Amino acid sequence: MTIMIPTIMMAMEPHTKIRYDFAMSSFSRMYGVKSISASESHSRFCKKWADTGDENPPSGTLTEVDFYFRDLWGIWGEYI
Image (cartoon, rainbow, N blue to C red; front, side, top):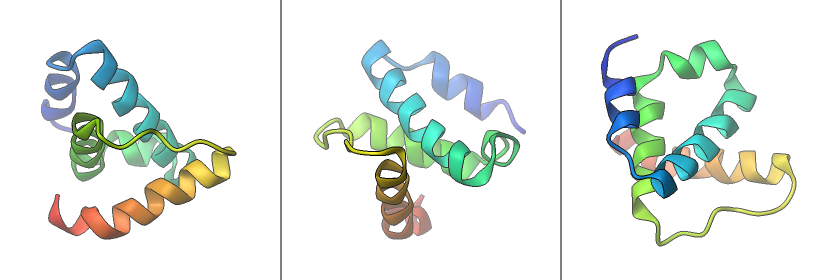
């Protein structure tokens, strides 16, 4: 793991940090904490999603939330 992830987290506004954590928790449920903690691409993706702010966080069951982020990763992931 590199220094990038803590640097990203320290520079965030509180509202953005909450959104970032929300997205990261979804990926951690799907792929495991160790895998996601070491993934710079997932961290960048979650930061981008948190920064957009124009999308409301998904609601519903955890499974629905996880599918939302999985589908978004399929769209955005290759560009991050």
